[in-house]
Structures are given as C-alpha cells and as structure tokens.
Length: 90
Image (cartoon, rainbow, N blue to C red):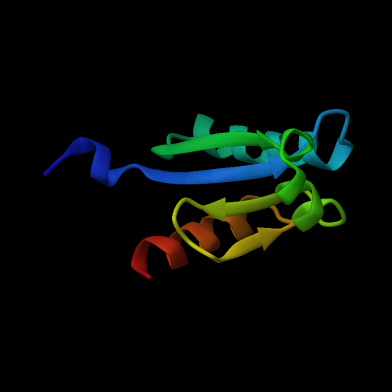
C-alpha cells in the first residue's frame, strides 16, 4: 500500500492576526505532537476573495482534503479526532 495513501490531509482556513486561528493551530499542533500522521495545510483566506467571502465570519475552519464537510470553531482535540475518524471511515 502506498504510504502517502494512509496520511490524512486537512486544510485549516484562517488568517493572520486571528487569535482563534492561533488557538486552532495549537490544538492541531498538539495532536501532531502526539503522533497522528496528518498533513495540515494552513490557508490564509485573505489571499483569496472567494475564501474570504465564504469564511470571513467563521474562521477558523478545518476541512478534510477533498471533502465538503467542515469543522468550525470552537473545537478541541477530542472534536478534531472525532471529525478525523468520521472523515477516514466516511
């Protein structure tokens, strides 16, 4: 099996100077430090007008790459783990 296929990928939408986005990144960093094999891309919505329109009032938002499902703030480690399990098992 391809090792890349087993990696769960997420996108965290936020923006700079956003305190809640920093808290969300800290939650995700803590989970990564615990050994979860995830790839997390942080996307600044200020760089894209469509993302800014979509997420301006709801950041931070975590999505599973390729999915329409979103996990909106507030979330903690347990919530992210449940979201990840839901995404992996479909």
